[in-house]
Image: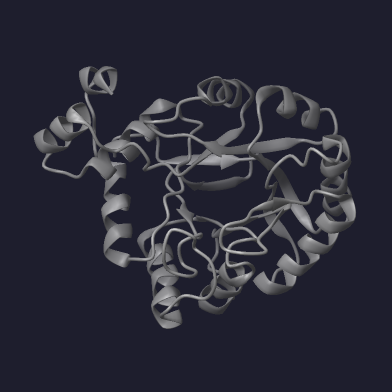
Length: 275
């Protein structure tokens, strides 16, 4: 394989370094809102990704909303040994075009309880604060997750859409094991966050990992390897740092297989430099 094969999230959740993002298994289109057109195909896709070797499926209560978590449980429960279901709370989805922060402690407690029921779990292995709510002190939001952790309802706590200052604040309240931020060839604003995560043993989950997979450089590299630009983009992410765990999503088994093949794509040092 071209890169380090696994990563240990929180020291004990050992998963392959390519996960699956479950946003696009819900309603079709860019909004990813509502129920999928073909519920059976969504379930078949989820079973397929696990059969191929995915051990981390990332979702959120806002995906659908609520539909992604429900589909995951319908397709995979009882979950195969070693499969980690990571979910998130703190964003509301009142309509296709809106993502509204709500990280009040009471809401996060209720959201986690509801996710446990939808996922048919007694404990969520990785529960992530989906955003930082400007109306709520970050310490209060993270503190609510610590309370759930002490009750045995959360195994590990992660953050999403944070900067280094916010990560440092959160780590004064809780043991944080992962960060999920926007990162890809086109948006490298979290470069310093990746390095911080690598230095401290945190996993970094880049969301929207395939954005920016066009341009003369990446096209030439894909042509040279007789592969796709998406595979090149994912291979680049895997080479970026051993802390990086891409979670590309799709609604298609064929597209998933294409993404999964990026694990075996070895890019040269010159190609990495070019990208």
